[in-house]
Image (cartoon, rainbow, N blue to C red; front, side):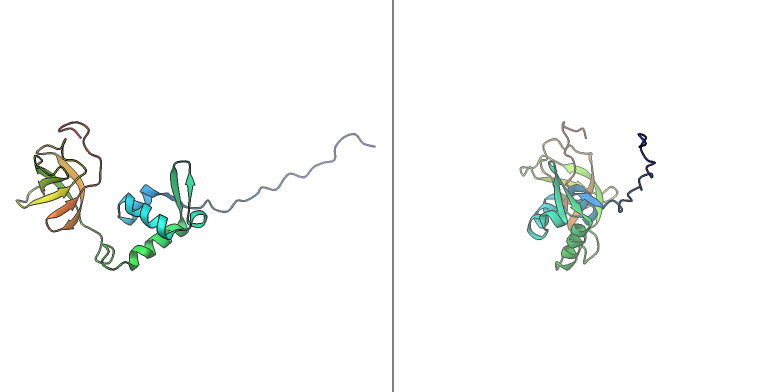
Length: 156
């Protein structure tokens, strides 16, 4: 009887498959060019919980197959911005912010005299001359800003 253990062959390395590609809801909204709320609404109505996305704590991670479904859903919707090309993004300069409707700013593109409306969450801290970038064009005279709002009056 030999008290020493037999020679053990080295363990074979387990080769794991390539890591799956995951997207956060924010990354998905930026990739698709739509708002975060739209991504959430489409995810809740059209995607399967475990197969297409999963919850990671408080955030939601969308798998590659879920992103493919989102892209095909957006491609099939008539009149979507993908059919007519991506929406035009523009940098605008605030012209007027003291309007009674707090969700609207009046702005114009640098070098242009055409004044357009810009939808914002609140126009309270916006001041004349501030740069709003990027704004998504909704129509010829209406833009939509979904970025950070200024925390203090006149400071971004």
